[in-house]
Image (cartoon, rainbow, N blue to C red):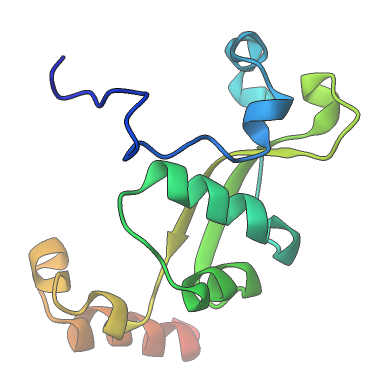
Length: 134
């Protein structure tokens, strides 16, 4: 397709994440959902998270985003393959991740389109309900 970039183009990010050196396409194809483990991001994930974000997303995130992600200030979940599941002697490998901000300043412009209400009603209302044990 003409929509696909030329893999040799300067603008295409190079695959720098460790997972590309550790797992072959054949190993990845043999994995099943039961081979994956899920956990929050950890500070030891910082370099791999940055490398994967640079590969996956056409936007640049600042250091604060990454620090907040690994510190627990943002909700995060990573899908990892433990080394023993991939027949590797090295550490686990991150295959996917999500990070979600619950702070209005990160999403207040789009929240009415997504939830049909403003941030104060939706997000802060939920947060105050959670604080009160609801």
